[in-house]
Length: 229
View (cartoon, rainbow, N blue to C red):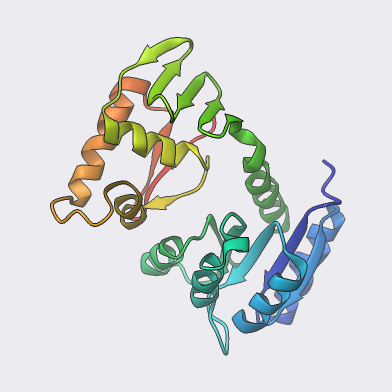
């Protein structure tokens, strides 16, 4: 795999962790940049424009959650992959990470082969969903036409309600990315006061009934993601 043109920024306050990840990613051909805290990470990111940022959660000066939140508010980082790296396994820290825009989550202690495999897979997401036109996605046997509100599976038309379609398009636009229930509510139902988590669950169930069980998976305690076939 040719990764020579892809840049990765690692933000962690532990020198040993920085060195370990840097060594293994450079072996894969990535350009690697380092920062020791969230503030420094934002500064470096603005200079090098990385394709992916690995952020520790617990850091001095500015933690990874806050750094991710601030960078997601900057247009140039809206579509940059952001992955959290942490020794904390509490469910609430994972949810907090996804709520501010994380794309994935890797737990310490670091297993180099597993980490490299995960990073490679995340960066491949850019090409997993082929954007045929501005408003059309082709993923496997699915064609999702946002402009016409049409879905075809294996050439056969699938009839979806408007919110079912919008939910599918949101998830499929970034295969593998975990969307929390809060982010789904914000993106699909905006500020509607009558919508609850149960509403999302019902729409997910209907999508599975119409498309099969393989496309949308549940991330326990967090939300949902679109699986690559």
